[in-house]
Length: 328
Image (tube, rainbow, N blue to C red; front, side, top):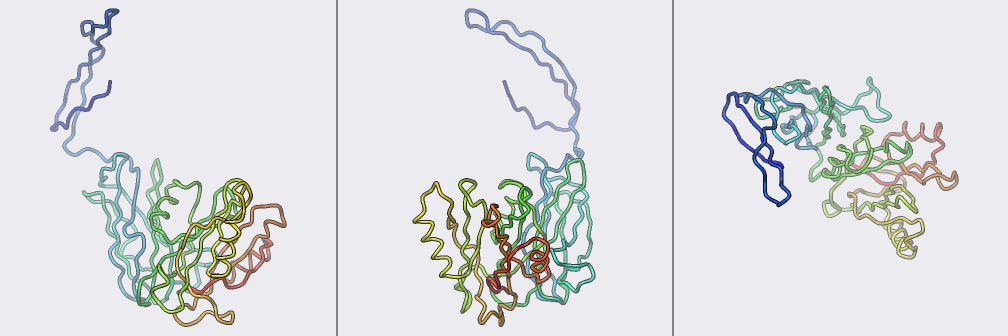
């Protein structure tokens, strides 16, 4: 039998447990002593082991040189109760292709470590540097069960709404990459609720809707399947390519490999004459691992880094497929 007792005021309590056995006639026998114990209840209980740390908001924007909105980190135990006195550390993650000595968009933090307060919270204050762009940052707890929670800061003076696009990589398939602009999906991926994925450190800036500016288009998101496949994701801002894949999927039986349309991922612009410009100056390059020819899952990767694109072609045998779309 399970029972809940309490709460108790501070002090030491004595608990005596008895058992009653059911007799052959169905009645309960006399109580039989089982065990006894004393347990203390403290007015200020010691910190328990953190089970989760969460940063809110998971995405913030500030103009270059301006302060970001305050970020709040919450630390809770397995019961969801706030934990005070927990040491936390935070800093920037470097994306593929970035180097420590490169001029990069970054944030200056008033502090890079603190202990959670009585409400189990830490406030993070940051100011954007002079360079435009987005970067991924993480808050860490190092203990018996190390924890991490990530967020994106964007240095941008662009008007209107911004959608952060975060890149993940599969821990089980080194060629499988995934993009999402959905904060809830990021939280699920970070917590391992959708399989073994990790953030690469890369973050891009798109739009949440094509209705926000002239020339914007939906980015279609496709996924195959675990079986018959392909176990991969594909993104396109081309209306013709999107319509073609949807038509092919509709005409393909469920027991055959096909691309299944998952909906709109975010919004972007298409290059004009192979060039990105205006309010969408950042090219997002698309690469293909030539999986079908190699007898492997057909994977694509999307990157804003020319050096990453060059390295994947030179050392990984990936094929360049040009500029897939233009971002902020």
